[in-house]
Length: 115
Length: 112
Image (tube, helix red, strand yellow):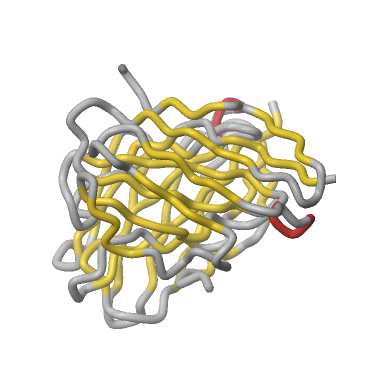
């Protein structure tokens, strides 16, 4: 597609529920990133894929967070047993080249609200 | 944790005025990037400046980089109401790191 597509756009989850957030990067983009953005803050890095390999997951806040990109294109961020502090906008970005040598293209994000 | 800090946190100006936002960072970088975010939307890449560059222009945008002071500035000239958004600087580390690290952003309001 022309841009990075994320779905759903909004998600309301009850505390303890599992959620799955989807990211469709630009076709052919090697690098894919997930960020978490709390209200009024800058995005915080969660994890990075180069093709299907998850090269960095140092930003995942707990073992309840899991990300995958099995075929090197679509990625899913899964959050198990959601907590209120997980409420945030989850942004996906992709880049044609690895290692941050060019600008990233971001999706519009998924706004997760845990009630 | 966030690498960069933007200053000011919020800025309100009249249409036609110039807007200047500053960014400071802590560690050595490969490049520094500026992004814009409209309310409720994703980030849009504006400009990238590499560590060996000092100034870069793109339309009404002018970015400077001072690696000795670990700081950058973004100047928007002749601002328009449509420039109202949050602006973030983001750095790519100078070592083998991959990810962009963002600052907290400057919220710019341009009044018509």
